[in-house]
Image 1: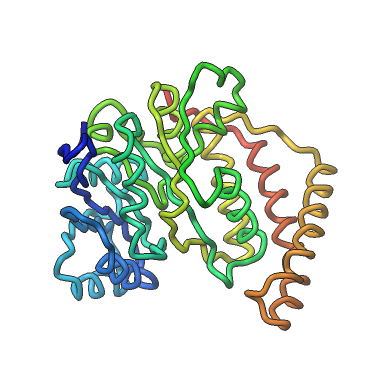
Image 2: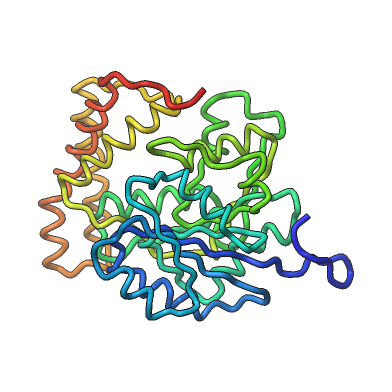
Length: 321
């Protein structure tokens, strides 16, 4: 069990290492570290940054925060799973809380909230926090992020996921295993022991979630542990990201159905029409922005589904045993 016992059998706050993986993260790293200084948490907290060869002002900004422990690696040694495992090996804390270099905690209670499910129940070995899209995020991604996290559970409580013997259907299992390590935490003993991250090129977090649920472990979703996070992508970048995601998921064994050309058209039109209503009602956008997005957003939906289809047609090699 992690942590010491206080009175009445209540688990005291365990020590935590907040691990941030950076590469040219100058845009948000200062905000992240400033918010970490404000965290209200009743135990020792270590801030560990692993930088993989930044060439912008990332390291200069980090130098303004002397409490940060910086570990640098060559860019060639970075791997999504490999580097998270390195963070766990280097960590001094009982729990390792992960943030990407563009995920900014929204409140001083972020750290306490993401650790709380593991304090309350020793069976919980990993926790995923909520992601809130940036106000100016392009509509397709903004509304997708909101939908994904709304589907994980209500904002007023914690949702627990484990296989109680009913997850026989692959769809149910994958839904329960869903995991994102953009904003997450896990027990160090698990990460350096039975369930480390696997060294795959993409979707290491989805594979980690599967390994947890498949191994009989419990994970949780803690919506009060919220960060502001959404990728700042152009139309072309969003298409490449979709293709990378589909290929990466296929490489870890996810079954991705192939769409017909007609299905691509139908899905793009359906998504663009649904977003039209959301854009009109979206108070984050000015009138001019709404007009611009009403014109541009259909192209994002077309590129999304066209790239999805093309990525299902390429040959891929499995990255897992």
